[in-house]
Image 1 (cartoon, rainbow, N blue to C red):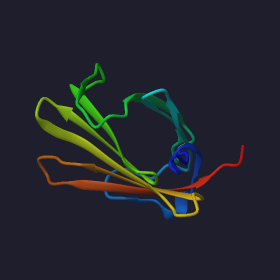
Image 2 (image 1 turned 90 degrees about the vertical axis):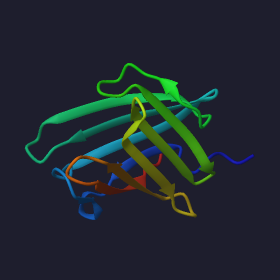
Image 3 (image 1 turned 180 degrees about the horizontal axis):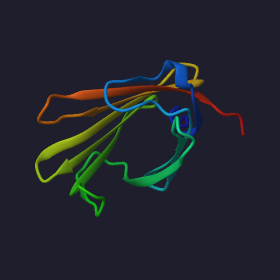
Length: 135
């Protein structure tokens, strides 16, 4: 079996980011790794004001709901759709609070990420494109 194309270290291409909510980061690094049956995400970015941010999360890559202690989230689900596509959904009880859809290009050099967040004012989606970093 081939390694999933979405795994790797990815550098944000800020000029290709489209945000319906908030400002796109000035720069960013997105690391997606697998350890056993778990998928792990490490995201670091610098906002337009120069402030650095980091976020790490992950869990079983089995398409099932799993409890989490993340702020505002009760359950998460990570699902590999195919070797290029990875989805995650965060829930607050039965309500979806965030859905992320990641698709690697056929050649594995680019990663498109859309993050959709439903809300009382309607649904917003932020879109980012990343380029694979060579180890």
